[in-house]
Each structure stands twice: as structure tokens, then as C-alpha cells.
Image (cartoon, rainbow, N blue to C red; front, top):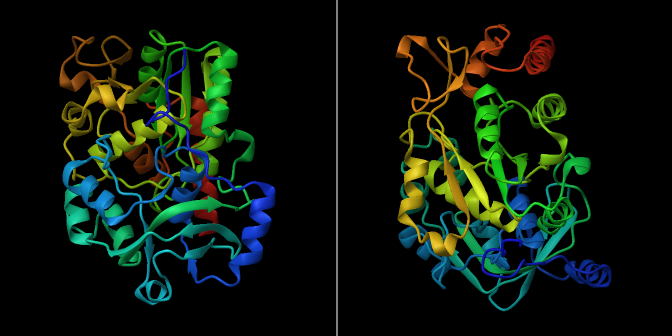
Length: 388
């Protein structure tokens, strides 16, 4: 029994070969918009159904509903607006009821949008609602302010024929992950969202989850991240090594998610869970400070937000975990629920701490991460230092 896509139908907005040829031929006569890698990620995820039930970019009513009520017009929970930002100059060329050509960063036609609405982006309200701060030091807020202040809505037809992930061998669409789960006989699947290499705390959470579900989808985000995050190619090498050596091969699947990282904390936890439901997952791991950055969110705010939405409609089960640590007394991973140790006997792990150690030229100890992963990270860091 497979979980239904969000909204009941897995959206497909990819043009057929013939339609794509016709759209490319017609695009030269349309007004054009140059889109960013961030928008290209959203565009692709709409096209393949990762953002079902969206068939295109949100109009103003949908946008306002997401900001104010965290809902789509039909009542489905939805936490982050998915919009097509344009400059004022680009907006002046567009008209409701007319198609527009969207060009990828490499200059190739990515899609055609049938324009249904053009509206002002309320960046102040969006910053407060989505990121809980107007502070432009926040990477998500800063990224939003770099985008155009107008938004264009409408259904899209996707024609881009290039891989946008950088990892075509590890890239499955929602329909493909669903087929892979069915082939393996997995009825319950837990997704793990990450933008960091898997350290020991991650491994502990994943294996706890695997005790109660059929399979694990390790689903690293490989779209835009902030500049000091570990590069995606390094992370992918880490994932392959640790999964090969320390996980049961028949119960784990690795596939990339070509989404941009918002760093929106609680709201992004809901957003990430919706996408994973579309990819066929029944459960979603939510640990400490999911999708957080700096001190903008509370440690468990991303877990509490699931209490604010209609879980019957959301339809994917969050698996909420305490902050895990390496227990110096018991010599194993634990949480406060399983360890009798004092705070002085607890070694807390995080991707931030690993990055800090690497920046000092220190190899993370085995309590932090597997030695094979530490070696990959050190090699990468030393290469960056040499290049600088």
C-alpha cells in the first residue's frame, strides 16, 4: 500500500518531446524572464510532482494564504510560498493571459508559464511569517531580498533537458522513488533530510527509525545552500561511503533532492515533509533545529509546528527525536531518554561543530563521525586551503 501524493495526484508538468519542440519554436515571440538557480529548482520540482498539488507558481491569493494561515486555498497545509520572482522591468513586459518564456541560468529555455497573475511580493511580511525575522543577515531573508520584488503566477510547461542536480546517477523523480519502494516491497518509508554529511547523531536517528519502518530514503538537498555549507559533491561522497559500509543495502535508498535550502526552520520542516510525501515516504525524521541557522529558532520549534497543522491532511508521520549525543559513560549514542549520564559526560554533535573543527584543521574524532567520513572531509578541506 503506497501513500497518496499530496492532494491525491502526482503532478506532471513536463512537456512531451513534440510539445517541447513547439514551445521552443514559439518562445522567441514571447516576453522572457531570466530565472535563478533557486527558481529553476522550484520549477523542476513543480514539473516532476515534488511540489504536488502545485501545477505552477502561486498567485497572490495562494501566496497570502500561505503567509497568513499556512494553507493553500483548498485548505491543505502549506508552509512556504513558491513564487516566480521577476524584476519590475521584466514585469512590465508581461500580461495576464499571455505566455512567457523562462530561461535557465545557462540561457536555455527552461519552461513556459501561462501568466494568470502579477503581484507585488510582500517581502517584509514574508520574512516575518516564513523566517520569523526581518534580519537580512539570515541567509533565507537575504536570498529573498536579492530576488525581484514582483511575482508572476501561472501553470508551467517544463522543457529543460539538462540535469539540474549534478548527480544524475543518484537522482530519482517522485514517480521513480515510488516505483523503487514498490519494487523493494517497502510499505513504510522514512525520509531523512540533510544538507550535511551523515555524522554519528544522524546515523543513530536513522537506525532508530529503521527499527520501525521498512526502508530509509536518504534524501540530501543539493540545490542552493549557503557558502559555508559543505559542498554537495563532498557530501555525496560521504553518503556513498557510509551507506556502503555501515547500513543494510536492502533497506536504504540514496537519492538527491534538487531543492534550494531556505533555512526557514519550522516552516521548512513542514515543506520538507510535504515533498517527501510526494516522493512516496510515509514518515519523516525531524530532529533538533531542523532547517535551522544561527539562533533564529528554538531547538524543538520544528517539531512543535506539526501540532499546528491538520495531520490528517498532511498525511505523513513526523518522527520526532530528542537531541542525541555521544555518551562518554556508556560509550554509545544516546538521548536524555536513554542515558543516565551527566551533562559533562555528553558530547553533542552537529554539522556546525564538524565544520568548525575542519576550519581549524582538526580531524573530527570517531565520536563525531565515522573515520572514513572524517578522512573525506579533511581531504576536501585541505584541498580548499591549498586552492586559496
